[in-house]
Length: 307
Image 1 (cartoon, rainbow, N blue to C red):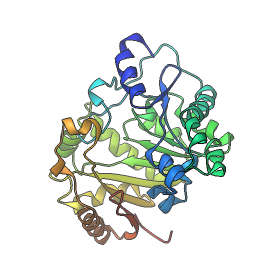
Image 2: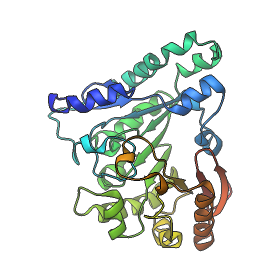
Image 3: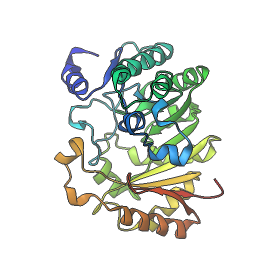
Image 4: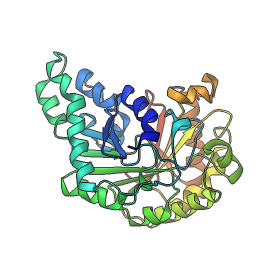
């Protein structure tokens, strides 16, 4: 990472990130630790069958993002972007190999923890799922499609989480599961909540929703709900959801943590019951049904058919 980004790198390392090469990073998820120590899995395990202790959370574009979302827990004020501006990029094979090495390094202390089953930590040292999100926008990395293929070659499944700002890149990607973050129902609320850096950000997002409708992988729309911003009129999301034609919709409550506390207040957090009501109203409007939920994570899973 270049010298001008050194300050951000220092912030990330203090937060427990493992830096990879010039633009990538890994961070052990809270739920990976929970699974190892207490046997508790995250909602992605409940919804999609992911083994939380074998999940590797990474990003190939740690300091680049096209949005400055109010609800983001990351230090968006220190981010760069929207476009990665490097003279050269690390190869996908290098990033994958080093992401595994960094995950093992960050987990190494759990071998001496008496609360952790030795079989489970052994499995954690052989991750089988890559959650490509974490920080920054993954599709800003110009070889994101090759990175996904490299993880697949090594026996991983992949979740790609994107803000929908790079349609050309998304067109080439074939992850196991594709997430698009849909936070606003119209252009004005999009500008207010997502704070886009591209003037045509709303058009880019809509183009990505259309691309999603054509994908053959499992598809999910994530709606992070912020009271006073996008919680109050769920039916207005209907047309955009139908345009994307996802298998699932995940309304999820904003959590007042990290750097988002500098932008929003605690009262902007919705309750689980509010999230559930939002989900049911959307489902009734567009023909999806509540398939599952997690009170601990304040998230509801809507399905358009049989899971």
